[in-house]
Structure formats: structure tokens, C-alpha cells
Length: 67
Image (cartoon, rainbow, N blue to C red):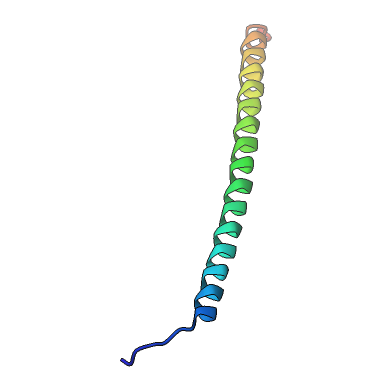
């Protein structure tokens, strides 16, 4: 293969595009972090609700009608 020659301007443009891509990835990672935190909080709330429902279920299961 032949040698590729890049001008200073070409290299500067390549570096700028790479920097833009890195910034975009950083933004996406930040968004994903927030989403993961929200999912974690939602899971905790659901666990508490399910636990409460199970306690109510067990509380009322003692009152079954006798035949």
C-alpha cells in the first residue's frame, strides 16, 4: 500500500471529529446513568409495594371462610 499523506488541516479535522464523537458518547453515558438511577428507584418502589401486598395477603389469608 502506498503512503497516505495528510495535511495539518486534515489531521485537525480528524481530531475535531473524534472530539465531537467523544463528547456525544459522554452525553449518552450521562443519559444512561440517569436512566439507570431512575430504574433503580422504580425497582425499589415496586419491591416495597409488592412486599406490602404480600403482607396484606398473608394478613387476610387467615380469614378464609370455613365450609
